[in-house]
Image 1 (cartoon, rainbow, N blue to C red):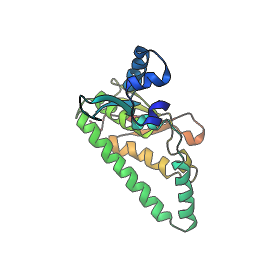
Image 2 (image 1 turned 90 degrees about the vertical axis):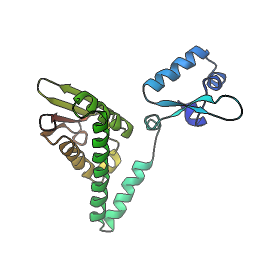
Image 3 (image 1 turned 180 degrees about the vertical axis):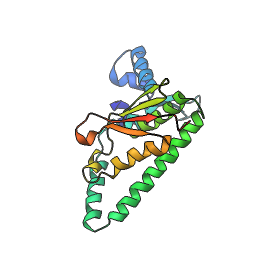
Image 4 (image 1 turned 135 degrees about the vertical axis):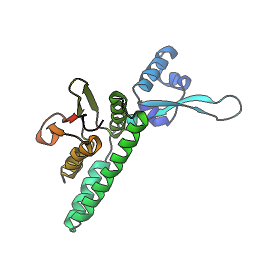
Length: 203
């Protein structure tokens, strides 16, 4: 993955030349990374002849690498608060989460209108791309779903304001239009933010 990150896009043959492993081994690594959603393939034309098969990072793959954006965001919030712009902060986060809700609804509706598993899978994919490391469990008998967010991509921001925590809870309430309870909370020292969701009202 470091090689792909540095090159931007690379073929299996070119990767073999660099890592000095058997082509079958490199291909298997690439296929596994692709299945896990960390890289994707594309056909690139760089001259006459057939386009070559190249692999490049997905957003999920890029999320594995360090980023200073969250620290910068925290400093921005501190600056706005010191200048009395609390209303601007609230308006921004509300607008940001409103867009997330619209995106989640659209993705889930495109997956299925009635199949809970397909809808949950669409939501899970979105949360993975955002860096939440989600785990889902659906209990058909009780018509309930548990969503566990094992990573907080807003951890630096939460140190400055708990608005993301409040809005994330509202995210699930609005998305499923039913009873939602947060049963664990990273900000309180738990290892995940867990939401128990009733699916009865959302069907």
